[in-house]
Image (cartoon, rainbow, N blue to C red; front, side, top):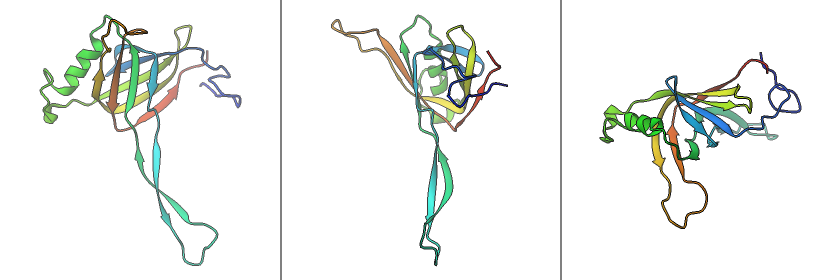
Length: 161
């Protein structure tokens, strides 16, 4: 089992990579260079107990999970856009009854190609896809962005390196 050292990283090693594999229902969609939104917040309720003036109790409540945003350069693969199309219903019919939720995974890939850590995302579906800004004066590579809504995630590390 993989261990994290007190200095941080995975097995005492801080990954020197910016590659994240995105998979949906076990099918590889592609590699991404940036991911944001992997977080969870516990809502709290306060309770002021009579006679206790030193503090106010904080009670845990509902978990909230923001949308996850994945960014990468445009590729020649149609896997991402095809999945977005399937999620939204055939031909983007905008019929919420045909919305398909999936189990997705985001995996941190090491510089040697090994899988280091994975986040398994439950009930994922695409809420936004954004393609490149097309301009003859554009600077930098053309990119695309995908935003996912979901019901939460779990995390795991893979075996020792």
